[in-house]
Length: 253
Image (cartoon, rainbow, N blue to C red; front, top):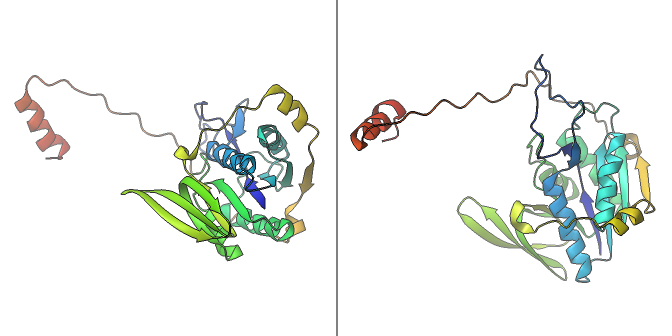
């Protein structure tokens, strides 16, 4: 079985994001970029499936700017077999919207014929949490979102999902789209020998027109601003004063 794993290039999660002075977006100048953490988990899960003999090929896919090659090379160094880069824009500030991404992935699915797509539940830059669900709808496949545990058994997959009330276990028929949550696994670090080998693994470049997809944006960002600073706390002198403030000022009791 072949597994397709979409990965996205985002600002590294350790970097403090800065908003442009004019509020038109996020400042990306001299900012470290890396693979979306949820996508790293997806790559790791695909590798574990291959190590247990449940899949025989892992194809990593990225849609965006040409610099996303670095992200794909990271996936290849982790253990993916080959990669596909769809260069959809030359501007690093342009974020390809989930519907366009899902349509391109649908074209790649039709071309590659994988038995499973594993992707992160959302990217940490726009938090859309939509691409996996849209892809499943376009393909007419089963979907299992927010996966906490995955067990592939023949034509079925048993997936434990993280939901508001706890954990939910479902069984879906294959082929399927699975989106990963944080507690599914802990991604491995790529070893130096694997990083060197990744440079020789195949990486094909495509463009959206190869899949007859228009990536023109449907949404316009009106304004970007940083969260308001947290209000300064106050000390109370007694339990009675605390209760009074919770009741009269905070309105929580």
